[in-house]
Image (cartoon, rainbow, N blue to C red; front, side, top):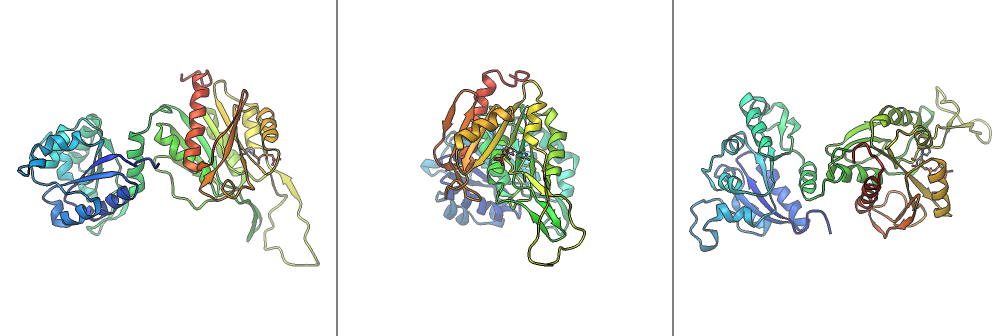
Length: 406
Ligand code: CTP
């Protein structure tokens, strides 16, 4: 089951050129098996026809407050009663102004006014309109009402200018929707996560690295954010989209990762080290490309600092420290050893030889080992695995770890 499956979305579309993007959002929601009902303003219908939205959502589109069709009478009240969340995308300056002032002059505005469910606003407009004090004040008012705001993105705008005001990417809005349906059990927690491999340069063209894709660490960052945490992600070189709402620090080498982690860790409540840090690096990086001379090449390697072990020996009281152990044999034994030697609260052990649990796959099967128990988890998606890891960390916090915040 995906996060939005079965969720009833009342999708308000207003009169912006970005309405064509909303069509794609509806498609993505339906693909996830969310149940989408679209309400359009009159202006929205000038950009994209209701037929497009009814075809994509599989449901009739609502736009007329005075529709006398029996099942549409009182639609302005019933639409939100029959939904879990209202999503207004794109939300024009005009619609934002009307919602901020409690206007009830069309079906969408009236349905939002009558809604007792979460409301998510996704502005899209020209930069000057967005930054005008009137719009800024209207958005502040919506935030005061408890509405959720999906910040517009930056880039080329339909008006030919470049700046803030583009409708956010679907992935960003999706994260906001998911967080609405997610218990905020990490709210107020500051969490540092590391992800991906590190690269240790050998010469200007070559490096030593490993097969880590960063998918597990990125899944941890997304899911922690959804659960309300303030997340900083220190990531080695990976090819993954930035997780929305997460502070991302990019590094390349183990030394850079160590520096970033040591800078951030003291202020963190929880540190999760899922990165596959290179244990060794070339003693020196050659200034020029190493040439083939003779038969072979001997590399002199030196040890990198063990970031996690260093954190473990300088722990702040109440800080929760979680490690990963990617193993090919004696998983439990190695997990126990690293838990003890690195002074951790929890270690997540996985089998790197499994076809569906190794590098660069979407699934994982891990065992969670803490001071008291070893808990094997089933084969799950990396996101579902990440959520189970957070469940365990929340239990640890409730049991007295991280006292400062409990
Ligand atoms: N780790 C780290 N710094 C390193 C090496 C590892 O912080 N230089 C962290 C990893 O992020 C992981 C944990 O230590 O959370 C275990 O990493 P792993 O590579 O499995 O273990 P090692 O301690 O390197 O031991 P070995 O390679 O001998 O199995």
